[in-house]
Length: 93
Image: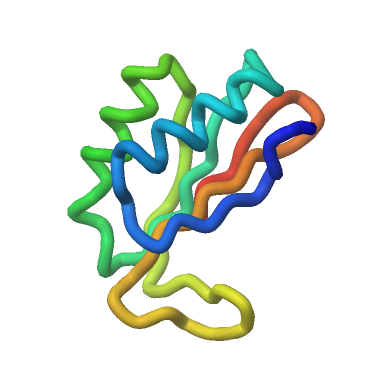
């Protein structure tokens, strides 16, 4: 069963992100990641970059004032990870 293409991470734990990327990589070997990071978590960007670099995953993204998850804006900032489209792109938001 393929790894879900949309994944929400309640924080930027490197081990959890690494696990998600490994699952996606199995299903989509040529993947990239689109990361949408809330401004409250912008200091975690280097961690995101390090994990993606270690797995040789292309990373693009943006920092937003806040994210909306399940119709709500979570307090304290969050990172959501999501794989992307047909070409194997992924979304992290």
